[in-house]
Structures are given as structure tokens and as C-alpha cells.
Amino acid sequence: MKSVWMILITGLTALTLAACGQNESDANTISISELTEREDVILSVTSEQSFVFDFNIDDEYKEVAVWIEKYEAGNLVVYGKLIM
Image (cartoon, rainbow, N blue to C red; front, side, top):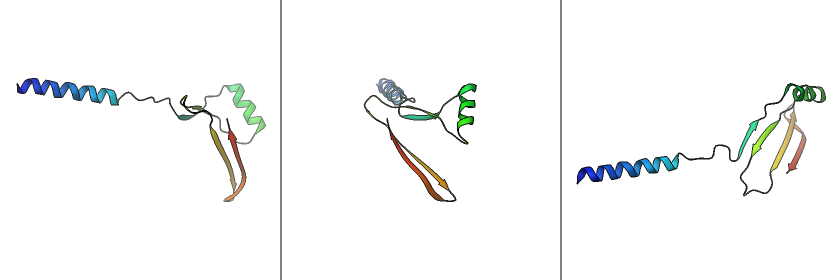
């Protein structure tokens, strides 16, 4: 009888851990974009420094807000907000 309980507990533990391991790593993420050489050249000509990001969000969200701040010598120079 003890061996049946041990097998049952082991099986339930394995199922619980397997269910916890299923997470969506691509949901709600921001990552640096991989640019082509041409895109890289265009950005280097048009700006001194730029950052390009890809983002993935769940379907339940309808918009994304991005804040952009630029500081020079510790003082806020530019502030912008973009809603997509």
C-alpha cells in the first residue's frame, strides 16, 4: 500500500512541475532588434545614436505606451510619449 501512495505522490509531483514549466517566454517582452547592414547605415547617417527594439505583447492589450527621455549633464532635455 505504501508503494502505491509513493507512486501516486511521485506522479502528481511530476505533473505539477511539468505544468509550472510551461511559460510563454515570448509574451510581453522587449528585445533589441537585429538590423540589416542597410538599416544600420541608414540609422548611422540620420542620427548620432539610436536604439531599435522589437516588442511582443499579449492579445489582451490594445495599446502600448513608450516614454522617451533624453538627459544632458543630468538635466532632462527631451521628453516624449508614443502610444501605439
